Image: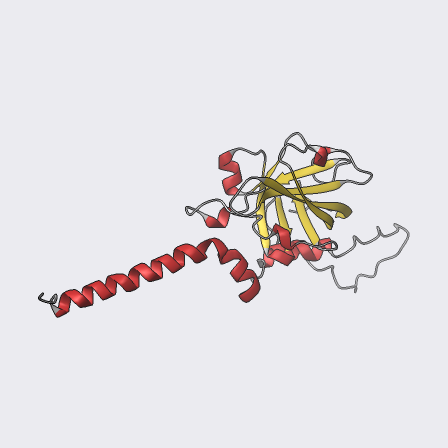
Length: 222
């Protein structure tokens, strides 16, 4: 039997290499956020870092009107530039995302959804936010809560909402059934609940992180 021409063998080898590379990309893409988390840690933007700095800085006590001020004193530093809200920032997993007003498909593709049946950030009650973990090949970046399982008690969660910065601290995480609505129950302190699907690539269960409000910066953010 006559062997194929040399040029044809080269073409077939080239196609084989392309298919192998494409297959590897196809297999590794779903794990890209985890690979990046461990091997190439990302930093949040300077604007999100400004929010974290505000959340970590206690609000100054109001000065007494009787305290004289010297005209030679240096003027207070101008506030850092921060993004427009509402948004959520989780430094540990390099997450910064818009908070969208409901749980519609289009909105959850654009950010983390606030359940309108729950309290608003900072309010006395339970604020529930939903986010995709890994959606599809079209836009893997919409998996805002892909790394939610990395959060541990003590981790910081910052919320910018209606011109105020809220500092929440993660307390616990657990896996629940999709029909479990106990996450909406009012707790002793204002609580933030982050919800996503688990295990990865399925919606069999819900991974839930509970965080408690520790402080708020009430100064209006421009």
